[in-house]
View (cartoon, rainbow, N blue to C red):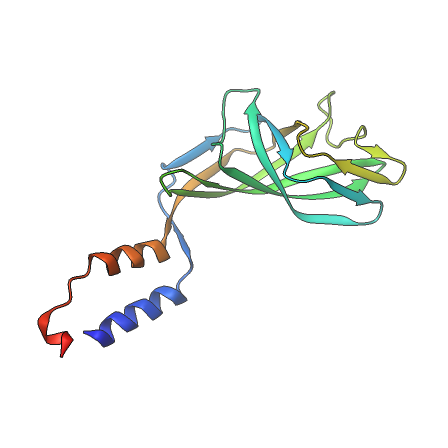
Length: 170
């Protein structure tokens, strides 16, 4: 019995940490959804350099579709033609009950005239995104931020619920 439990634990550790569940569980964001987002910390980009894994949080919606409060988006940023272009490629959300949602996104930050890129964030060859300031994010395609199963948590639940039999204690 100990060998079986050890094998199951090792197998679980080798599997991906998250396995997707059916697409009907989660957050559906249609194309052209407009969200208000903020960077978590001030970020500066110099001309010729790019940022990857820039973290954004949703602070509201202009079109009704929304993401939960505990949701982070991963983005890339670079200066192109004297403006800062920020492209979001993924969202990861954690609900207070422990449910995890994850999915790909294709969205970009737009300026006040709905054009991609920010000129007002740039000064010379440097652009800065400031924490606490809302930016407008527009989805280019629909996004499904689906519920995922945390395999590690499932193994821990099984361990907590396991009742050892009398033969395995010898």
